[in-house]
Length: 111
Length: 116
Image 1 (cartoon, rainbow over the protein chains, first blue to last red):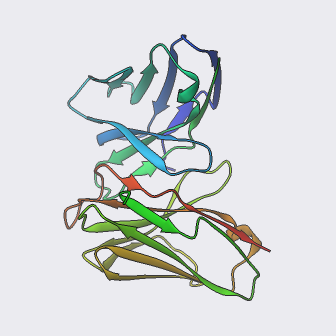
Image 2 (cartoon, rainbow over the protein chains, first blue to last red):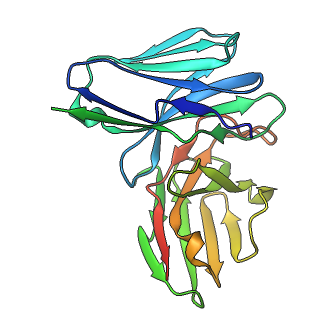
């Protein structure tokens, strides 16, 4: 399977702490994206990072990409209860015309 | 109007029923997608439409029949479903090129389907 793998499957932290989620993938990519999904709702796009980029920021979100290790990480700083959601990475593999999603990391942020 | 609207949000149907899911996008995108999300499984791409033409069909059983009458509307017609088809069905759109559908996706809130 070409799908990315998020790690950990579940993460539980306190408000104010940082949350780090990882995504590993199999072959070369054009881009990698992170999405958030609140329970029972649709997915919301967070960040897209291209294969020639190493780091991107958006507010409290920081995404890194290490193509030599075929992995990406999503860091949420100073987490809030509202960050409770599932987070998915989606990879654009070279030679493939559509995205491949992983199974996601379920993040629980307790007040 | 929100970007991508799906109706109904919840649907319960028997195995012999015929029903349809509807998706409408107000973003001016030219590509629309149906995804299936089941518990503990990755998001599965079912169909991709670009400019009303189906460009991808990922081995989806014929009991699922998509229809794209124009670039703003996408339907998923359901008939003779099985209980294992119970899932969250997500519609998405994107401003894709004719051959590349790997950019940012804009999702609707989903239709939760239960097949009894």
